[in-house]
Amino acid sequence: MSHLVVRGRRINWTLVLVLGYLFYLLLGAMVFQLLEKQAEAQSRDQFQLEKLKFLQNYTCLDKQALEQFVQVILEAWEKGVNPEGNSTNPSNWDFSNSFFFAGTVVTTIGYGNLAPSTVAGQVFCVFYALFGVPLNLAFLNQLGKGLNAHLIPLERWVHKPGRARVVQTLALALFLTAGTLLFLVFPPMIFSYVEGWSYGEGFYFTFITLSTIGFGDYVVGTDPNKHYISMYRSLAAIWIVFGLAWLALVFNLGADLMEKFLQLKWHKPGTAEEA
Amino acid sequence: MSHLVVRGRRINWTLVLVLGYLFYLLLGAMVFQLLEKQAEAQSRDQFQLEKLKFLQNYTCLDKQALEQFVQVILEAWEKGVNPEGNSTNPSNWDFSNSFFFAGTVVTTIGYGNLAPSTVAGQVFCVFYALFGVPLNLAFLNQLGKGLNAHLIPLERWVHKPGRARVVQTLALALFLTAGTLLFLVFPPMIFSYVEGWSYGEGFYFTFITLSTIGFGDYVVGTDPNKHYISMYRSLAAIWIVFGLAWLALVFNLGADLMEKFLQLKWHKPGTAEEA
Ligand SMILES: [K+]
Ligand SMILES: [K+]
Image (tube, rainbow over all chains, first blue to last red; front, side):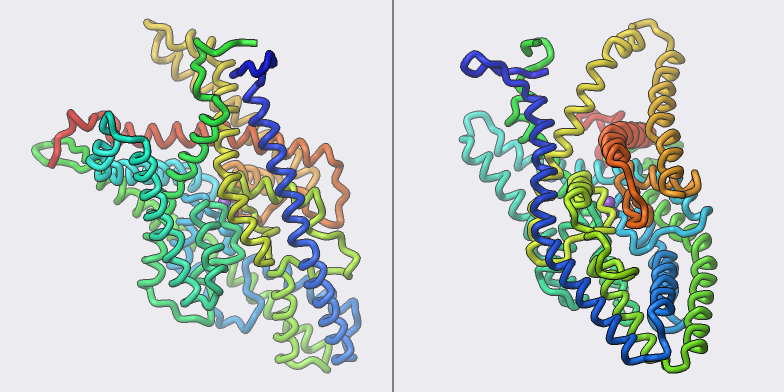
């Protein structure tokens, strides 16, 4: 446990971190609720209106029949069937989509627009992830080391004794800016152009993907009515691999800074005051 | 680059890792396709049949009207509206759900059964994750250190010079077995009981959650027709936090072993043979 004596009172920094974490979650809960609840109510009212209109236009339908049909559609959706159009729709599990799915498993992005629905598929998925996630970590680590090796001359120059702290900060700023442009600012332009999203939506997709959150509300290359050139998917795959390596570095840097800020790393076990 | 001379030929282990990674993705793509494609075709045929049956039973409906209605339902679904029932359904964005959502963002699980649909919500979500993900990492690191501090006496005993390698292996096996039971084998019993899943489905949910893949095809505590006691959600939250810390350790161990196996860590930069 790390402590600091301030005006005669000990502050437990681990406790600060735990309370800060809890507070951050509560804050998020409040803001998300504030931002989303009204829009949800609006969408819901609109949908109920459309349902009513449908019932009025087609008088042979009763409420019960409609609800039953809604349930059939949702079940199909949950089993991964696209309810639109007819049975000549291309399969969700063609090779290219399966490859993309395998990629979302090992990177732990897990969009979930595709997910195994058979028992055999779910069992395989567990074992596939069990070995695939560490393999992906090893791969990203190696990629990071490779990038690092090329950065060493730069780093030596930056960390030369006597070099001003301002230069080190500038180098860090350069690393963050260049990566931000290359992985976060530029790709959404391509995605929004090809997918027909706004730039904001493309950026949201970009960030949610590289952070490996992967809600799956926006996924590139999945519109069955669009013809995607294979170059596009390959570029997206390369972007994901390098972007993940970069953002993981940034997140670790952030976690490091937070721990340093909370003095958790300043006291080594031997020198820390124990309560 | 790390190399090894075998029968006069150099093996580039980085290349082995890259090719292995690619091969693993291709293998996954093939197996997932094999396991899921047929089931998908079956579900799709069944759904088309139900659609036809519906058209035959309600003759005032034509194909176009039905397709239009399918689209309306899907749009509602994508905006996060539950199309079943009427507008008195409880909101998806009440405080408890928003709190759960905030947790899935900072842990990068990102089930996606809830996702912000407003521009303001999406913008906030990006910034929330930008600071929340490192905060969560710092929190998990600190938790790991806390666990480690309690394990140190055990570790000292295990790593005492002269202690047989078999004891070290046994200690590792114990760590893996105890964690597996506590975080992977036992919780699915509770989840499957409360949610009405099979044990296999509960285990699949457990693993997909703790690995932070989070497809969102199975999520606990989301059935609007069930009354969940608040104890259940709290227990699930505690399980996620400790389970994440444990599985992250296991995955890192796995990545370490793979890198060691590929000899990537045996050669230090100074001693490695450069091509
Ligand atoms: K995820
Ligand atoms: K996800």
